[in-house]
Structures are given as C-alpha cells and as structure tokens.
Image (cartoon, rainbow, N blue to C red; front, side, top):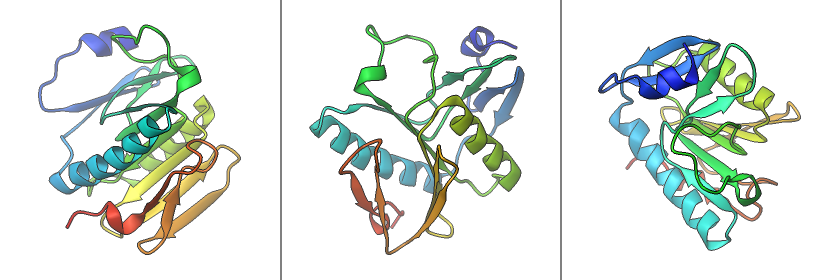
Length: 176
C-alpha cells in the first residue's frame, strides 16, 4: 500500500497507519487516552501560538516518513516548527517528520510496537518524542541523540530545544 492509497482508504471508526508498506489498523483510542492527548495538545498549542513557534496538530494527523516502502505514522499530538511548515498547507500528509511527536499509550499498546514507533520518529528526524503513560502517570522523553529521561507525576515536562521555554507540570495533563 502507498501513502496515497492510505489517504483514500475509508475505514470508519478505525485508526490506521502505514508501516513499511503494510496497513496497520487499530481500534479507536479510549476516553482517557483522548482526554490526556487533548489536555497536552491544548497546553502545547497555546504556548506555540503565543510564541509563534509553528503548528500543533491534533490526534492521528499523518506524516510520511522517508524510506521505502512508504511509512505514514500518526502521533497523538505533533508539533512542526514554523520554518518547516509548507505554504500552502498540504491537504494530505506532510512529507516530513514532526519536530515533536507525542504518543499517548492505550491499554492495548504493546511495548515492542511503541519502541518501533519511537525509533521510526527518531530515524525520520524527529528531535523529541514524548511517550505518555496515563496509567502509570509518567512520560518517557526520547531524544534524537539517543538519550532518554523518565518523568514522574510531580515533575515538569519541557519543550527543550524544540519549543524553548515550554513547561508543563505532568499533574496538569492527567484525567481527573
């Protein structure tokens, strides 16, 4: 399958990605997943807009990653810096990786699949990947240089070099 075929595919109530030419179909995310992704997207988006840093995209926005066969990944939240946003905005997938990709774990996520997704983001040029685990109330921060940090509920998530000055206490993103 190609990215163009995926874009035209209509599978109602399913989440889809293209991983090295193969269609991956998953059930819709649960309510907690959506609430956490929305809170984090809102806080990040407000900061990004206030500082004119770029664009934050909502859940399941597709990005074509380099390589063959084609891969289209869709983070729960994505951020693309202003200098990398094409004008006009594409109606289809953006043909580059986001600067920041946020993956919010669902109960059915498997560690190996999450690790593969993080590796795909980093290999494609994503500078920062946040893997948000609502069940354990922690975030794993993966960086392009291969370093990784685990943040707990009472710590602060920062935008580092991707969104300088952004800071969000983790306690602010969990469902209440």
